[in-house]
Amino acid sequence: MKPQTMETSSDFSRLGFGKMGYGCKHYRRRCRIRAPCCNEIFHCRHCHNESTKDRHELNRQAVQRVICVICDTEQPVAQVCANCGVNMGEYFCEVCKFYDDNIDKGQYHCNDCGICRVGGKERFYHCEKCGSCYSVGLRDNHPCIENSMRHHCPICYEVRSNFFLEFLKFKDFLLLESVLQYLFDSLKETTVLRCGHTMHAECLYEMIKHEKFSCPICSKSVIDMSRLWRTLDEEIEATIMPEDYRYNKVWILCNDCNDTTEVFFHIIGQKCSHCQSYNTRVVPPPVLPH
Image (spheres, rainbow, N blue to C red):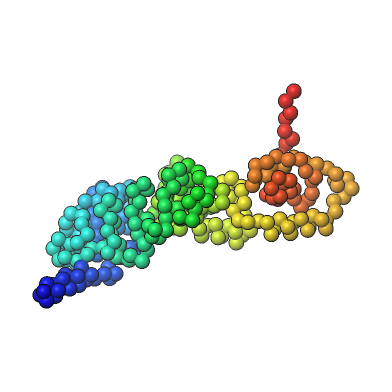
């Protein structure tokens, strides 16, 4: 039994040889990929997309051949090198042809998304209507918006790779639309707002830091605003309107509950009588049927 134990230990050591020692700025891995679209060799699909001049992108599932960086052997896609026996990626997805030695990310493949995701499979579930993986804390706890991740971040309009330089060169707005990055494919952390819309987490942080508290898509409040509403109540109570305006009424639409009501006008703000929100806007009075 001892020789078998030694051989197993040796095999295990060989599998881990060079782990975390190779790769690119995107991933730690012990192989490079041959792009079937242009027959060139790159560390990963992102390296390919950032280096191409004609704006073509690599289909991750189309990769058929990889090159082991330990022994430089080109071979069909597999986790273990057929020549030297090293693990070319501690995490390996046969569907996405994806390798990564840094398994602290908690990578997993979602069959419904069709791609690999990070964060730990036990912490996420796939929302069928929204069309993406969400935190289990949002299960039955968020407004579903169909394909909510299949659009661009409404704050930064993240672009794919280095293609924005092509837009600056040609000033082609049709081209700009084609190079914007969907949140579904973005490498940045994405957050789901109370209204169900999505954006980059860092963009939400910047938006709140600049005192912008409403969704740029639907205008609903993105955080609990009750404390601010109480402050506005106190300011309105302390600010008496001039006699000429004190009893003027206006119609408002509440961005938070979508209710339309008639309220007294005040220079500080108009409060929704239905949900007590000040996230409102003045609208024309409703047209009554004859």
